[in-house]
Length: 109
Length: 120
Image (cartoon, rainbow over all chains, first blue to last red; front, side, top):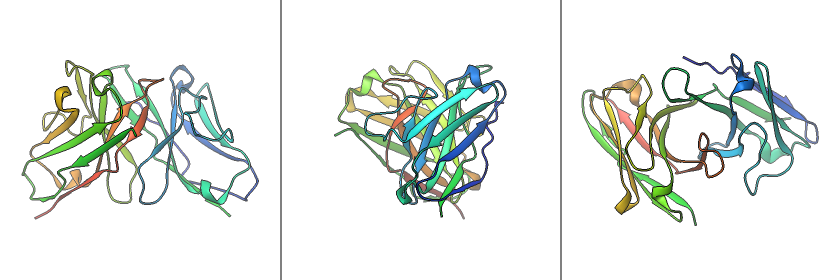
């Protein structure tokens, strides 16, 4: 089965840039989606199809995907960005199934 | 307002059964595939199941295949998850999620979840 690997934690100072990676075998050939989840809340889609943003998501959130790594980049980080972030793909290689990364806790110092 | 509201979560004994429901509003329900995603306490997200817009195709995670059944009633704008032979490891917050409007592989709307606890 397809596996997505994320670092457990990333720390960044306010105003700096946070980069959260998502590793997977030839992930560049898949569409990657990113979710933000704050404590006690449901996940929110922040980036879809590698680099597109849903309506209402700030331009500070961007994504890229190539080779074996996809990256969520958060520019000018704010305290309110502190949350868990999950990458996700749809794996149709053997059977249709959703796959999530293990999640990354973003801490704003 | 686009909204998903889950219900049906309770405490159930191992081996028991449970049916979760998800009521959708604010969008054309039968235009979209729907998913169930779960999150064990303190853990990450785990995809559980997918049903196509018309109910004609269903898919399951290996961890629930043969025990859970996803279904929908488009006339009632409702999604369901029948859970049988429940195990302690099924304890989780269960979310229903809508397939994305612009990317069908993404989940663009989530409910607030309903908690299932499997314990004796």
